[in-house]
Image (cartoon, rainbow, N blue to C red):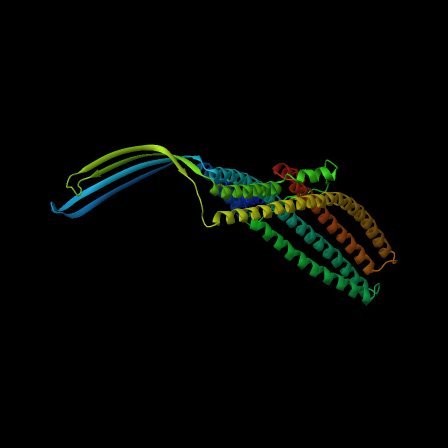
Length: 436
């Protein structure tokens, strides 16, 4: 039996809309974020450097073939004739490097490039998690600001209506009405600004996921505030010296060192094992008879570079300068990692203290507003006193909301600084989300 259309519509409307949580948005970004896709493509390209380096140590095999038609006129005291014949040549050559110093350095460079690619991909994965979380929490923060702005506007609107009613019966002055109207106009402007910022933050999240975000899960009211563990800044700093950025730069230094070895190796002799098989079938010759040869060769090929105009020495000096540059960049990365770790460690501690302080301030402002409303009812406080108390409470709520998001981001940034940010940390934050 078919259900009536109206009933189906009602059932569809009654179905609750499931909000996207942080993990859902992260999965979307994994498949759609162009920066993450570019990082994976860069990894796929750089990891091939290992195979290219290994190939320098393996044998090379080349096959060549030719077929030529010859018209040869021969004139001697004994011969005066023109010969027409075809020559077919096939050659198969194998070369196995036995000693090539530059090839060993090239293989080591390939290993360093592959290790650097792994570190860069790990860094890009952390960056994706952080960017998604920042964008997600930014939308939630903008939504909170918009909600607070609307609630403040509604509260002031009620106060404005009350002022107008009291003025009409002679219980309030025109000044009270004007003050309430000015406060209401300001609240309207703040709501417009908050709504615009909310759309901007949603657009930033859309850039990561490739689609307009729908309803998002919000942060629960209760938040477990905890400082960094272990509670020792220097241990975190020590751990930061092995994060992906540092490892990547260490491999860049190793690659620069091997570049020196590669160029120095151009001064060294080379020794190769060479083997070849050549087939030559000439249908004719100057003597007018066909020639057929089938040759197999195997042996060692030794080469010793003597002088190349000073180019090799120049390249060695250039490579040494590049190595020095890479080493200084490594030192800079290590210092930056240590600094960022200290900053984020302190940011987590400050976040805990700030959230706790604002929670206390919110309770105090709530009591202050209640006292001001009671004083207003008894004629001891003016409309502007009530508006100011309301505004202070909403401002505190807004600051508290932002402080909670800042605290969570500081925790993630601390993990990034030491190279320990992964999906488990993302899931920890996701468990703090729920419906309002």
